[in-house]
Image (cartoon, rainbow, N blue to C red):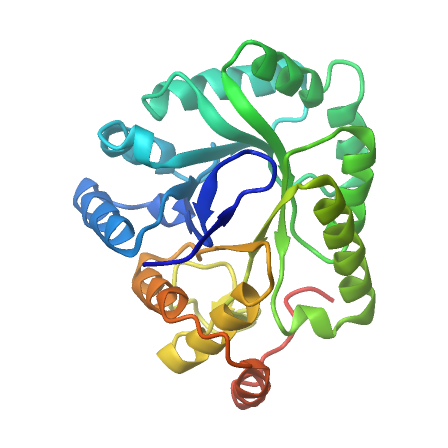
Length: 285
């Protein structure tokens, strides 16, 4: 079974590997059923979806309803205004067949102009505070992609005491000195405040570039088991950090197998070797 860790200040012991339900964006009902069997077999008890992940919420809801007490449920809205976010929340509650979301997150809040709208009068933050007061959501978070994410997450935490953040974290990205410094500063702040830190892009090999995509991921992923092992172990060896799985059901079993075989032995040398062999390159420059 996959290790469980305290999910920040929420009081929930979440599986260190969180199921990224972006993988349900185009999934069939049969695939959803099979995936739940896999998640339960590995001890996954935390699911992360979003209003914009295709029909993820719609196909997730009917199956999740049977297991609602067994899973910590997170979703997101990309809306930046109070009215738009409020509408999204009620749609998510309906599609997910639940009367309460465990973690509601501002989706990909990284652009300064959008940040000002979201955090200002009539912005999404007002909808978040109201929804928590009404008991529709239990905890609040913010997510992001790109090199500027750690810095703007720190700004978000200065503006509001969020319960969780989500951002990219992998070996290649941490070779960028500025990103690494910003990530460490954010992690230090989160640890001081007991804010949960979720990570994405753990198995990214680089941009697709000119090659046609072979997986349901917006980046070219590592796909050999040994390479995935090294990448997953590198992330999960960081205390207190969670790994959100990629948006490809075909890679899910490999990621879960890697997480279940997490070794406390030093994986860095193996990872460095395999990153070099795969000619991995940064997703963001």
